Length: 204
Ligand SMILES: C[S@@+](CC[C@H](N)C(=O)[O-])C[C@H]1O[C@@H](n2cnc3c(N)ncnc32)[C@H](O)[C@@H]1O
Image 1 (cartoon, protein in one colour):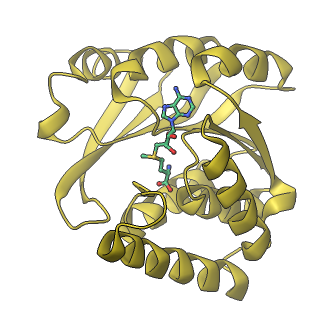
Image 2: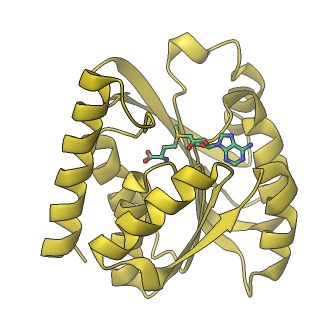
């Protein structure tokens, strides 16, 4: 649901982000842009996702978009983050947005926490958003793959040309069957050109 508290919290995070960049005080968010956030919302909601997993919570900006989509589908978000300061920040933002009841925060390094998280789910992952360490995307996908179903969507941020070498293996994997991938040009929160890889797991 695109509620007033969701909208208000997103606008406040954007303003806090601008202030952080101007003053250099506080932690950088490295969040997606507002437009990319809406793309994630549309993709997650259109997939009728019940179980969504996000790797890299930071301030909770993208997570709020996903939780807003999941409020419409009756789903839940598990979001992973290793920095305690960002876990606390995103918790406050999830509460302010009124979406905390849709979210489970998973603390620790994704490569350590993801296997147990995936094993604990009561069904397949319908939607995954990769936004933690870029060189590890291919490993994240390897862990996720047995838990995806035909029709599951995997969105991966920052796949623009500047990361072509780092993400070569990931893009080769999702660029081949059974995945169907569209590279969607985006701009990051600073207005620089980037891209989001949106991959659907087709029928094997
Ligand atoms: C690009 S930011 C995420 C931004 C967020 N998705 C958004 O758009 O609002 C990446 C986040 O991933 C976290 N991170 C990086 N590597 C990680 C790892 N191995 N395990 C867990 N979190 C990690 C960082 O601390 C950072 O907060």
